Amino acid sequence: MGMQGDFFQLLKEQGYQFGQPAVAGAGVDLPSATTILAFKYRDGVLVAGDRRATAGNMVMYDRTDKVLEIDRHSVMAIAGVPATAYEMVRILEHSFKYYRRTQLQELSFEGKLRAVSKLLKENVAAALAGTGAVVPVFAGYDFEQGAAKIFFYDILGAEFEGVEYAVSGSGSPTIRGILHYVNTWGERPLAALTEEEATVQALRLLTSAAEFDSATGGVNREASLYPVVKFITQEGLRTVPDSTLKQLFETKVSRHV
Amino acid sequence: MYEEPYRWVEAVGNRRIYLDEQFRQGSPVVALGYEGGILLTTASKGTPKLYEIYDRLALGGMGHPADLEKLRFSLLEMAHTEGFNRSPSDVTGSRLVKYGIAPVIKQAFEEVYKAPFIVRMLLAELGQKPEKDTLLTINYDGTFDERRDFAVLAATKQAQTRMQDYLKAQAVSPCSLEQGLLLALCAWAVGSLAHQQDSVEASADSGPERNRDAAAPIPDQAALLAHLREVLVDRTLECAVLERQQAGSSKYRALKPAELARLLPADFQALVTG
Image (cartoon, rainbow over all chains, first blue to last red; front, side, top):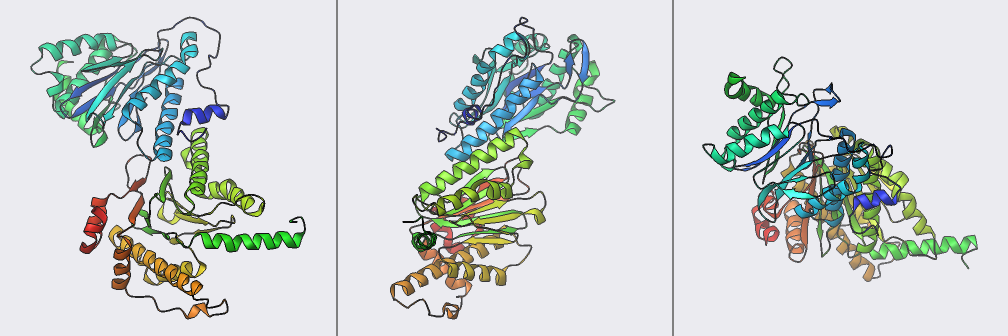
C-alpha cells in the first residue's frame, strides 16, 4: 500500500537496504568521537555541535556539520558513524517531506520521534557490528504541545526526553557535569537564558569539551572555525552566523582560555 | 469489435467526446510567473486542487478527484525516490512528465476496454533562475505542452484560448505577487465565464458549425472580479506559490486566508477569510 505516506516503506519495497552490517560482528566500538549538546533556553531549544571528524586518533576533517536540519522545525545532531548518520538524515528528510506532501498535513512531532527510533532499530545489526552506530540528539518544535523539545537515543533506538538538556559524543561526559552544575546552582537555570547568553554557554561548553577530549574540535580562530549553533523556536530554525559566534567568543569566552 | 482499426479510431474518438464532457463542472487553473517565483490559483469546490509535489514542483489539476489522487501519488513517489537515490536537482518536471506520467495517461486513454484518467494537470517547476521556470500542462490523452510565462487548464478549448489571450494581452513583467494574483484571478474568471457560455451554447443546440471565434468581447476587470466574488460564495479560493526566496529546500507555500485578504481588493476580505 502506497497510500500511507511512508517513504521508508516505499524505499524498502523498491529493494533499498538500510542498516546491513558490512562485516560480521567485531564487537561494540564506542562510536562517539564528537560533542553535541542541546538545551532549552528562554525562547526554545539551542542545539550545538563541534566540527571535528576523527578516525581513531587521526583528525579527518575539521569542518563537519553535525547539527543537521531535517525540516523547518527539526534538527538531528549526530554522534557516531557519519556515513550512517548522514544516510539517516537523508531518509528522515525525505520521509517528513513525503508524509507532508502525500497526507497534506505535517507529520506530528511524536511521529517524527518514532521515525528516528525506527531507523535506529533497523540499524542495530550494523551498530553492534561496529560499523554503523549512531547516537543522535533530536530536537524540534512540537506544535501540539506548543513547545520546543529535546530527545536523545541509545544505539538500539530507545528514546528519552531531555527535559532540560541532552548531550552525546565522546566529549559529553565533561559537559554533562557542567550542565548539571550550571543549571542547578548557576545564577539562573538554563531555561531562563536569553539567546545571547545561551550561545555563550554553548561556546563555553564546547570549548571545555575540546579541552579534555581530543576527538572534539574547539574553536580555531586562525581558520575562523566556529562550532555550529542553531535555535529552534515556534518560527522555525535559525543558525547563528559565524560573525556573531566570533564576537561572542572574543568578548565572553576566550578571556579564560 | 475494437480489433478492427476503424472501430478503434471510432472508440477513441468517442472517448474524447465523453472526456471533454467530464470537465464541464471543473474549475480552471491558472499559473503564472511573478517577480518572486511562480503562483498558481484556482477556486475549488470540496477537494483541494493545488498540491506540493517536490522541493520546486507544484501541481494543479482538473477532473475526477480519484484519478487526480492516483497520478499525484505516482508523481510524489517518482519525485521522492529519485530525489533520494540521486539528488533533488535531478527531479525535474520535464522528466516526471515525459518519461513518467504522460506515457501512463496515454496508455490508459487508448486502451478502450479500460477506464481512462479523467484529468488535466499543470505541473509548475521553479527553476534555479527565473528563465528556467517551466510550466507543463498534460491532457487526458497524454499530450503535453511546455510554456515559460503562464499556463492554464480549462474545460474547453475555447475557454483555454480565451484565458491565454487574456493573459497575453494583460501580462506585465515583472509583476509583484499582488499584481500577479489579480491578473491570475481575472484570467480564472475569463475561463469560468467561458465555461458558462459554452454550457449555454451546448444546451441551446447551436450546432457545431457556429462560428465560435465571434464570441463576446472579454469583460473589463471590474466585471471579472464581480463574477469571481459571485462564484466564491460557494467555492474556496486556492492560491499557492513557489517562492525563490523561501528559506530551506521546499519552495512551495500555500497562501493562507489572512495573506490572501491582504493581497486582494478590500471587497474580497469577507469571502476569503469567512
